Structure formats: C-alpha cells, structure tokens
Image (tube, rainbow, N blue to C red):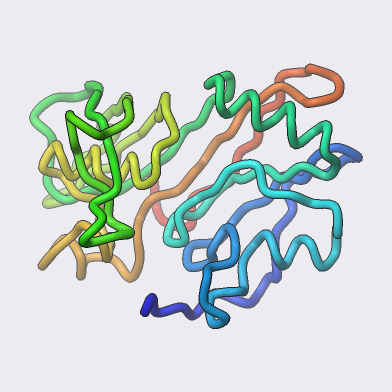
Length: 219
C-alpha cells in the first residue's frame, strides 16, 4: 500500500481566486484527488471542497510533485478549462534536479507512454500501445553529479516528465518510482516542481500566468 503522510500546514495555499477559478500551490506529498483507500482520502481537492463546495479539479499533479494547479468553481469554468488542457492551449513550466549531467544543453523527448500494468502506477515507453508524449527540456545548471533542468511538457501524460527524463538516463532526484541507489537517496522527496501555469480565463478570455517558487534551490 502507498505510504501516505501528507503535509498538514498549511491546509492549502491560494495563489489566486475569483468567481470562476481558484489557483493553488500544491505541496509535495499531497494527493491532488482522493485515492481509493480510506487512508488516501486526504487530498488537495477534498481540502479545498470543504471551504469551496463547488470547486472541482481540472488537472492533476503527481502526489510527489509540487506546484501550481487550478480548480474550477462552477461547471462552465470547468468545461472551458478542461477543453484548454485537452486541446493543449495551456502552457506549463517545471523545474527538476536530475542525476548526472546531460551531454546536450537542450533537447526534446518524443516517446509514447502507457501504464506498466504489472508495476502500476509506474508508466513506461511503449511504441505499440502508448499515447503520444512530448517534452522540451533545457539544462540550466550543472553541479557535480546533478543538473537543474527546465521542462516544458507539451502533452500531459501521467508521469510524463519522470519517465522522459529517465529515458535520457537522468532520472529525477528522489523519485521513489523510477530512481535507484544514489539518485533516490540524494533528495528527501521528488525534486520536481510545477513552477508556472498559464491559460485563458474561462470567463474573460484573458491570458493569465501564475507562478510558485520551488521548495528547493533552483539558483
């Protein structure tokens, strides 16, 4: 069973709120939505709904991933935001510390992904059954046996950034699903942060950009 000890303080952190949307900064270690087991019920969606009963999740971040996430406060906003995510009209930026030092300064990973069912929730590259997944990356800083990477996902597959970086031979530090040995023990948790999220406001159609500082050093 998944070990689950979510952070309790703060209950949730609001970055922005109006009549249509609520934008939050999710901490690492908190599920975006409730899990199937009772022990995994605590989640960002449940916490927010206790205060804002109409709030509904639009997209998810992995439990171990921190950063910007948006929820809708009424059905029309939910429908429009869901369409933007589905049609890839949103923009996202992540930062991650990875093990090792990439040979190139920047590049793209275009590898289809699907669930590794015998080992779920792990995902894997699969050319026959996988769904298209594209990630652009750039190395910002090299420090000994680790590197700071900027990640721009074009698609939004489950564990996309984690599996794509692993496919390059540079697994994200602290990744309890994909890292082993030193890469796993070099960090207390997954060092992957959703730093920026941009989308069109579901009512005004204004282009909005929200950011949250990483809970780890990205200098």
